[in-house]
Amino acid sequence: MGAYQGLRDQDVSTRRAATLTGISRTTVYRKPSPPLRTVRVEPVNKLSPAERAAVLAALNAPEYVDLVPMQVYAKLLDAGVYLGSLSTFYRVLEENKQVKERRRLAKHPPRAVPELVATGPGQVITWDITKFPGPIKGKYYDCYMAVDIHSRFIVGAHVHATESGELAVEMMKEIFGIHGVPHVLDADRGTSMTSKTVVALLADLEVTQSHSRARVSNDNPYSESLFKTMKYGPLFPERFSCLSEARASLSEFVDWYNDHHQHSGIGFHTPANVHYGLAGEVAGNAPKHSQRHGQNT
Image 1 (tube, rainbow, N blue to C red):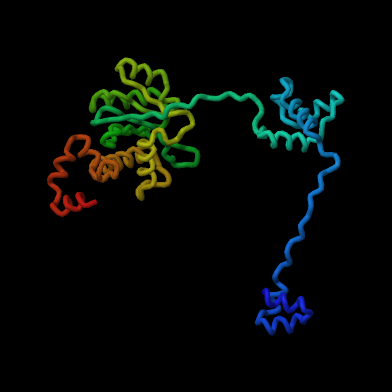
Image 2: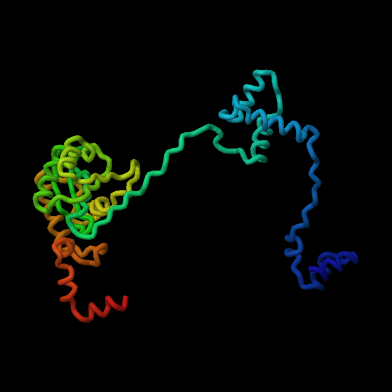
């Protein structure tokens, strides 16, 4: 392009200069011309530093500090004071890094993330309630399910037509009678989980209560993951025709999950083997090639 421009400076025609330099005239015409340098002229009505300081002082005055700039602007006009335009108010705040929420807001202390540790079965049980679709739209059954977080063993599962604390207490008494009283019982903050009947039972048995944080959906991951495994399975129907069908389906799922499902969270053992202490025996009886493969991974 330098040679082409040199020919053009010597009054050589565009066609001739393009031919001599081997440059397409389309390329020459397409090349944009350099932008013109413009000089920014300061507005004649620009506020002086002292005037801008007066605007900032007014915005930060005790009677205006909790108001948005538009409200401050309006109140100053009502008082017969004009310090600048509304846009100027925002520009002054931007220059001083004050374009943010100006009101005094309540700050809620962060809630500690609940951490439950179980070194063996029967120590920590988590439970929750999920909905089973009934025979018609708007009709649901309530599935109560409790799982041991160490072994992932489903220790209790019931389906009822309603949700209540009394039904939850019945399930807990059954679980505690079979698997023993746990150290901690974890749940979310649903009405049944925080009902007086449940609280009274756990207090009598000296079981520590653990609850998820409010409006946090992943503080009870064991129950939520279990519900997803159940509902996303190929045998879970779109609707249950009756309560007995829902109970039969849940019973079938619990048998499969506890005795046949190889859970990735417990080394692909079944929950029953881990819950009853058979995982070590099963691992010891594994084929030799499987043991070598495990060592290499």
